Amino acid sequence: MGKIYNSAAEALDGLLFDGMLIAAGGFGLCGIPENLISAIKDAGTKDLTVASNNAGVDDFGLGVLLQTRQVKKMISSYVGENDEFMRQYLSGELELEFNPQGTLAERMRAAGCGIPGFYTKTGVGTVIAEGKEVKNFNGQDYILEEGIFADLAIVKAWKADDTGNLVFRKTARNFNPPAAMCGKTCVVEVEEIVPRGSIDPDHIHLPGIYVHRIVQGDHEKRIEQRTVRQREEA
Image 1: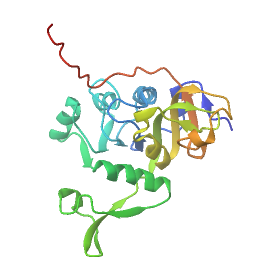
Image 2: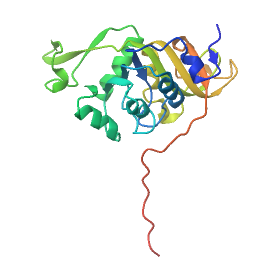
Image 3: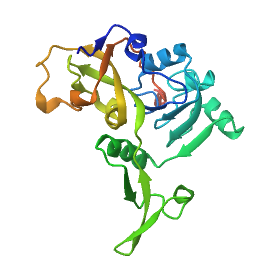
Image 4: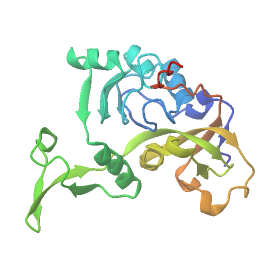
């Protein structure tokens, strides 16, 4: 069955429902599935739980779903750069499950490999460990973290062929591969769809077995933080 769809809305058709868990790739504004996020906003799907490193900024990325109150809970590592995120959390309007960044990535990856849980030292003795099983290995305590099995994964890649083999662009790879792996259904937006066989197998970052639907789109590619050096006076 063909995996290529004409628009983000078409690619998400039949997949969205209220109260679902979505895994979203991206890091800040780098490698975010902006077209798919916009389509979810337009669909009006609500009470979402979203697993993502962060929630973008106020008017871009996952931040647009916070503005429309479509997100009930975030599973995240970082909540800075988004005033609406902080406002909703501090006012009790938004649930937040903090995850160390590596733990969040591994929870996604583990689920993609069919692993329901794993033990890690990260977070031992902190609020992260509250309510979690602790087990001792070789004299060291580890906490049990569960894999994130998402109803839907939305990710952004640089290139795809029609079978869904993906190539990511430099640091835009970030959370996209593990997010793609953990979704029961994975929808990918890409900058370019290339002919089958044109991607060197050694250059494929994520095999098409994980990818169910593909859409090609235009992307804004904002710069989240711009730092420049002051010009020296002659």
